[in-house]
Length: 418
Image (tube, rainbow, N blue to C red):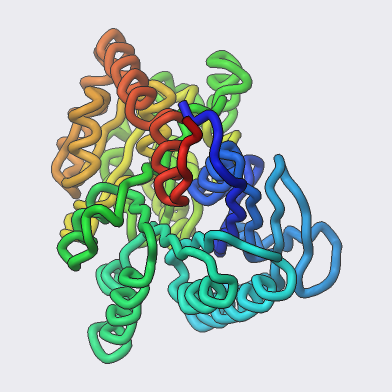
């Protein structure tokens, strides 16, 4: 138990996205900010004023290039951005450049003193700014490796091999050498960093999980009622997928399974999330008459309630070496909330599900195996309960507050008072 520290650590946290509990999106940044706060740090976050999934301007009617607010003891500076930045790749790149530039200015003229600059490595445009700000303020630099660049961009086809990819790789190597500590979002990312010659003593894994927080405010009954509001009519065995609707997640395999189960109307699918392929999936569901519903992006608290009401949950990755090192935060949510998971893919997720005893693993892209796993879970409710309980025990032991706090304290080089 971390009970106290020699000095208050002032952390300047640079993260493009910072979804709060009532907003949709990845929760890792907010989880990290709360971990820092709970360790006694003074935390200032600089983030975009534009909600990255909905395009909403979060400045609440206030004007100016940089606004300030406080939430749960955390200071949040929001810098101006383009509301329609997801319209195309060029708008997105421009938004990232704007964010990086304004973040640099806000860091120097609005943020105040800092002992540590903690930066998420996506978008990569902000990492040069973090390096400069850390030097100017005489602060330590900590990298939060959420995705590996340029590997991720190359694998998704967003970036082509060539000069630009080599420049990005060189810059990332430079940043990793200059960083005091590095946090990796998955074991696979850490393994890859070690292959890239990052010293093992400089990098640890901080999972995308906050099992120590109360994610089920309304209880099981309320969660089931909320889920049934979205679920296909007549479905008794409801399978939830909560995640991205883009290239990085193999939603097509889940819809292939729904097509194979089309005549078994007791099985229904709820897909919560957003991404560039969402409209294609909605059209496919309607065209094929699948027993599936897409909710669109949901606030995190509502997404957790839907997961809590599910009979089983699913996640799928394409068959590609990069995704062997991926571990979706929603998979950890499923386990934390005691839901059996069916996973199509390889690598880190398989290892976690095996260790937790909370899931069934299928080959990537194999809809027939996915269907058989879902039928087995439907027909064995006692096994579903056993798997869910085992998963919760594993999460509380490995992903709970003490473990996460210790890793964050290590990253910030906080010494425990004896």
